[in-house]
Length: 116
Image 1 (cartoon, rainbow, N blue to C red):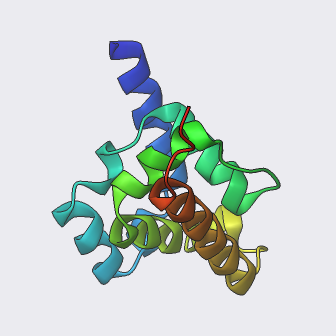
Image 2: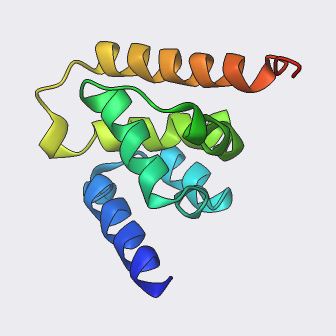
């Protein structure tokens, strides 16, 4: 378990190493809502891939993403976009993919399960 927490911390550190450049508002939202500690590493990696690369988030992790709450999701995406590593990405495209990922997961979570 300590190894998973260490890996999670490294991923969060990598994703947010541009934190010094992040807006005060996003940092405040993230801190006040304890956003960085609400998702496990596998979910973080899938969500990141679906938003910043080419991929999708599995049904398994949609619940975890929605549990993060939209305010955290948005603040983390915006802060990651401010990281110099992602300067060549189109913010409009990333925000659109972020919204699409969020809406897809929300619809999946809100939809009733088929009865057996």
